[in-house]
Length: 192
Image (tube, rainbow, N blue to C red; front, side, top):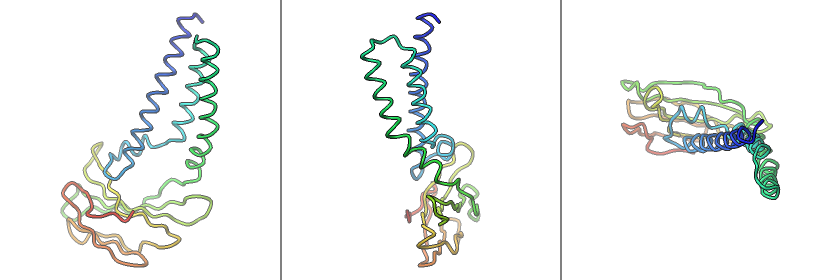
């Protein structure tokens, strides 16, 4: 391979790593309450993106024509990043199960508002973790708002239903919550 070709590979790998880093940040930011659901679903995978970024940085390092001391320093930084961060990112990715949707219920008279209840296990134990969301909109513009995050070991969800087009009732093992919903889908409060 020519020097020009090696530089293209190196800069392409740097560019790919930058794009993946931007995508990972976008996915993590969209995970906040009110973020776009499509970005949350597609881009919130820090373990996968992190591993790919480290691989691309190593490829960029191998094909670069920087002085040896610069490549050595950069290589040590990438290696340190990989050794320190990857186990945590991958462990979090593999220990958490994919959420299972228990119910999706549109609001009466408001098909653009949907109440979504999901359950998943986290860590090594079988204890469920419940999340209740309110989805507003349709298609790629759907926004997901956090309503409740409940540890199934300490509490459980007995009921999550609409009591009107702009109000829902969430009943846990311990108490009942009435939550109002704004026109933009934002719940009046969150139990997360």
